[in-house]
Length: 276
Ligand SMILES: [Zn+2]
Image (tube, rainbow, N blue to C red; front, side, top):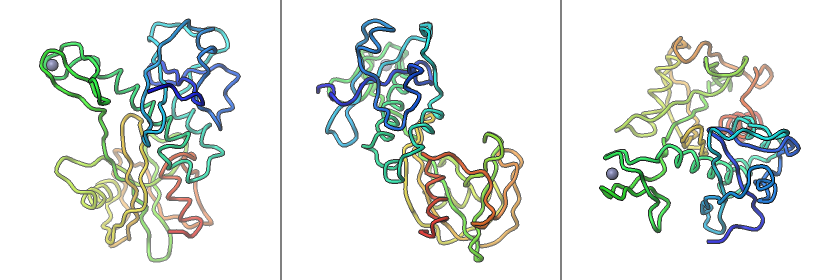
């Protein structure tokens, strides 16, 4: 594999993306030129991740946590970076695994996985890289470890009058309201996960759950699987644990919504545009 000449290196430290201050305009961000990194941090040898479609590689490099950033470089939370990258992106771009945002998701996911899989989970030996696959290989016990992907459902709930349910989670910034979401339990199918999460978080029953779209969401390692479903009974009762408030909203009275770049915003926008 050779480094794609059109892609620079995605530089990370911990969970954050490292960039010079002058590239904060990130709508077309595709990594940093090697010479830019060399000037600030010396020579780095990036790890090359094959793109999802196999047509090119995406170079990533993880700075050691102890490295101090030079003047005029900054550490950007990857969620902030995503918002900047997605601000001008179309919906197709956001969901396209080979697009700029898809590539950022992939390199971020893989670099985080590499950071967290240094040692074998079975015997504790320092892992190596598997020779032909994107996997860690333990030289002692032979255990293979692939990038972890944790599926989660996210669901837009309709009511007969056309309103949708939006909820404020304690973890959300400000007064943002979004869709009900949650991880799939071991042994559970997707439709059951939708029904359970809706019941647990807001006390409602739903029916006619159908798939709409999915999106990798590597914060840290999810695959968000988006559904729509119909209200079938119950009274909105936020669980008080994760969900502080949940209400039915019409198109004319929307609260603060999640940022562009997320499948939640994508589903909400489809509904706003009358496409769901
Ligand atoms: Zn081992």
